[in-house]
Structures are given as C-alpha cells and as structure tokens.
Image 1 (cartoon, rainbow, N blue to C red):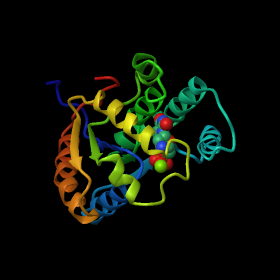
Image 2 (image 1 turned 180 degrees about the vertical axis):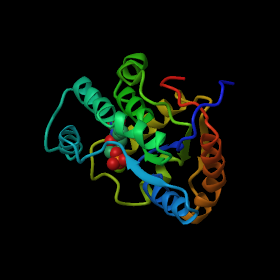
Image 3 (image 1 turned 90 degrees about the horizontal axis):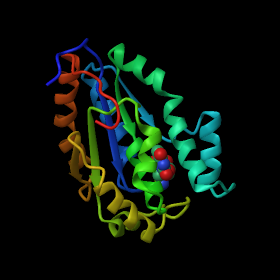
Length: 212
Ligand code: NYM
Ligand code: MG
C-alpha cells in the first residue's frame, strides 16, 4: 500500500457494452452524490464537444471513414486532451463519474483484430481510475433494449467480440456489476461502492497511472 497523499475526488469509470445502462447510472450516481453534499461531475468519452470529438462523432455516425489505427489514436487523444482538466478537478476534490474510458478504447479496437498491446500503448500514462464498474449484460439482452444499431459498432456479432475483449482487461480496480436488473436495482448496488471510494480518496488514496 502506497502512503496516503493529499485529499482528492474519486475517479470512477463505468464500462460495458452499448445499451448496458451506463449513461443512466452515471447520471443517477452524480445526482445521488450531489444530494449527499459530495462535489461530483458526470463525464463521458468520447467527449464529442472538442474538435477531435467531432471527428469521432462523424465517424461513429458513418458520415466519414477513418483508418482503424487512426481512429483508435483519435479516441486516445480525446482522453489526453482532457487529462489536465481531469487531474485538476480531482485535486480540487471533485469526484468524476465517467461513462467509458481507455477500457472501451482497447476493447472496441481489439475487437477489430488489432493487437492488444498496440491498443493499450497510447493509453499508458493516463490517470488510472480508482474503480472500474463493469455493467455486465449479455449482448442479446442489450439488443432487446432498443435504440441499438444506429451507430457503427452497434451490431450483435461485434458486441460479442467486444465483450470477450473486455474480459481480458480485468485488473484490481475492476468489479462486475449485474446490469440485467432494473435501473434502480443496479443503482442500489453501485452506491455503496462509490460511497466507499469517495471516502478512500478523500483520505488521500494516491492517483495511479495506466496500466496499474
Ligand atoms: N468507443 C468509445 C471506442 O471505440 N473507443 C473509445 O475509446 C471509446 C471511449 O464509441 N460504441 C466506442 C464505443 C461506443 C462508441 O460511445 C460511442 P457511447 O458511449 O455509446 O457514446
Ligand atoms: Mg453507444
């Protein structure tokens, strides 16, 4: 165990297949934390508001084509361009609940057949989340939720491969969450995990770097 550092906000990532319920859970967690007087913000990657994010959005919308390697690096650069703001927020005590991060980056590109280590390389050195909460759902169940298939990657066969790549990314910060239940039940599972991590980071859990 590393020595305690300065008090800070927690960096919590929600991961999972498309339609696993991440965005809903992120919003609910931030509302919950704020109602408890905890400074918190919802973030998401890709951040489609930046110049790079707009290129990514156009690609996902099939309005443009990009080389698989080039778009992988764009997704990664989209995290790097937010890095200093992210670190500043955490330092000033704001907890960040983040919808997707480097794990999505690796899982989705590796699912196209690119080597795992190549996919991980551009992420090395980014702030590592304190917890990765993986909303686990069978791809068939996610598909039944509807609104699926509007974007690139939202195909059953591809999501199955993505799920198998996520499996290979498990590390010490990773926790599987059963996401087949209703939104309130899932939220009830997440809250105590997040509460504990907010406390741990307040007490100075050192921020580490990818990949721990
Ligand atoms: N995605 C997301 C990637 O391929 N690489 C990444 O680094 C990230 C963060 O973008 N199908 C993919 C996963 C999703 C798509 O994300 C859009 P969202 O959360 O559905 O808006
Ligand atoms: Mg999506």
